[in-house]
Image (cartoon, rainbow, N blue to C red; front, top):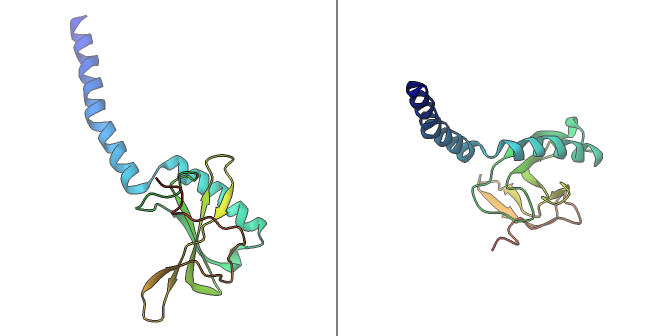
Length: 138
């Protein structure tokens, strides 16, 4: 009976020492899998409702920002590049309250010399009610 208790304790110890750090490193490198699931579920539906079909989109996928964003939103973003505006990257976020998709005002624009700038100017796909991703960060 004592050997069984030692084996259970040892197994639990190995699980804690190995699994938790591996999980932590995974989340640091890839982002929270739940947030990625939410973004992959809600944002494509939102874009389709706006009339942005796959033939209008050059690239779109989940991205994990490396800085703190607006606390009202889940940390992950969904980036979209449209075929007729390939030099501009739009970002969308999902609110924690209600899981609503909102476009962020900040966009990445690649200039002719290859430098990326963050702009808030109105562009082809700018929405009237965008949200600043860098507000409400404390």
